Image (cartoon, rainbow, N blue to C red; front, side):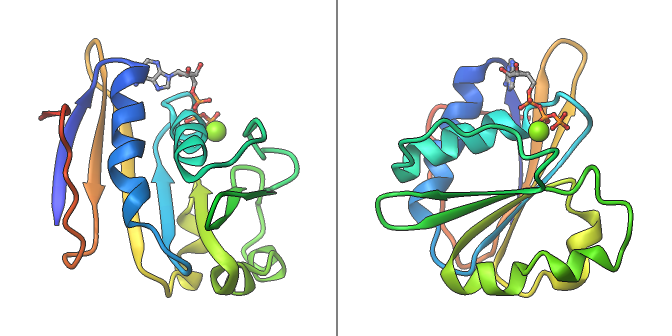
Length: 151
Ligand SMILES: Nc1ncnc2c1ncn2[C@@H]1O[C@H](COP(=O)(O)OP(=O)(O)OP(=O)(O)O)[C@@H](O)[C@H]1O
Ligand SMILES: [Mg+2]
């Protein structure tokens, strides 16, 4: 199922994260696409809050992976922006992460071959004045996007 929303403010992105969080379970992948500064890490921070992560979530640009514990789920936050080599992707252990929790991936192209789990794809972009997002979620998931404006 594809849905498009306008994200006028951080509040809208927060609503988006709140809508999605209750549907997540172990083995799910959340692929966050979109240009620099469009709000992928901000979305992940809000998702973490919603999952009960108590630590501050920061961009894993340099470390590649950060691991957080939520109330029920572990959250793996990956940023592949600096990963140049296709082969390095296998050494990250994404498959093992999927056995243990939910995996959020910024700049997910290189991880495409590893995406076996249920995948939620979010493609963020800048509109004229706002941000927007195209969402592709598994058809079996019925998400209530209350309060968000369709595009
Ligand atoms: N919907 C929104 N409306 C307004 N500002 C936003 C929105 N979403 C995120 N921001 C702001 O945009 C800034 C950059 O966002 P963020 O770091 O999340 O981008 P990113 O996509 O992760 O970038 P990178 O590709 O560099 O990792 C943050 O300061 C954040 O507060
Ligand atoms: Mg980021």
